[in-house]
Image 1 (cartoon, rainbow, N blue to C red):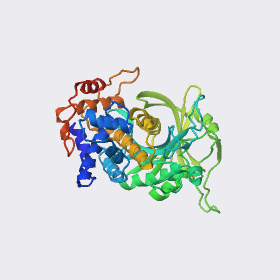
Image 2: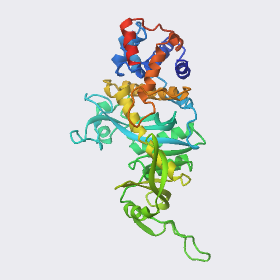
Image 3: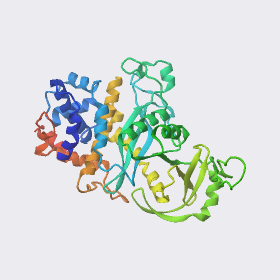
Image 4: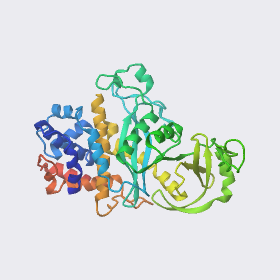
Length: 446
């Protein structure tokens, strides 16, 4: 539990030293723990019950706690910055791997902040394609933790649709004011610039799907961050590819060509490159796999720069990956893009495991605070796993999966919370509940 103390105590220092600030820094640490411990989901009422019964904090009253959960004075920006600095060795192969994607969070109430009818491209046949939901754009750090890939949440922004802002919907206001519209690409660029300023001097590779992998993200990010910024994404099948331009001969008149000969669509080039494909051994989806792949460098008019393209062939299908970082090898491109799926797992951990999807808060500040608590709880959990000396054993064995899961780390933290030294965690000490049924339930989930 001393690992958790070393993580949370620096965050508590950002609260003021007034009597109210000392109380709130104590509540903050316990709310983070209440989100992590797999006792119940993180609805505000359940968090209050955890503080009252699990941690023995009977003095926490309902009204005061809800005021705390909706406070405008929680120092999220400084706490997130400190948390980024606590991640041991964030770089992979000399670069920062950042997974970028957006997520929808369906809700029911009509007055919930940031809710609108959002298009869901992943909706199933029996689901609405325009659910009433919140939408946020998030960036996470892709990193290997004890031999398995994971996505550690770093930063996020709520997406507020332009149609709802133009209509001046009440549930779009923040502190009584209508915010300025920012599309998802603009939000992504702002977040990437913020991270690049913190991790200054480090090369950044943004791993994203084809929706974000275009010049709408690359051009403004490259302009603001510089040449240390690169993207890794997937090519659409109908994109036109061009060969690298021929070197201008001495004495040849006219300017040098920017693009070489037209090679055809991605589908055409994939068929032509299959004869040159070789078998590569890559660490993909948790184990070593043999894949058939071919690579070439081409000019992409959509980005107006040379890119390395890797075609990965399956039995009947293929996919094409591209990156602006020409120094990446075939295996690195396949492994890094394969790790991108961990941001989808991260969304599931935030919404279902931690419980952000079950939140019933409606006030704008309360909604933003709650999502910050949930995402910070996931980040703290993964930092805790990184700092452990040995990998955690998997509790429920699954065929083909030997590495531990996110739930295993949460249960390890729950066991540590039952230790007698738990009261040393916070500046204001609290006595854990001695209620026998509660302790028994906590041991059951642990």
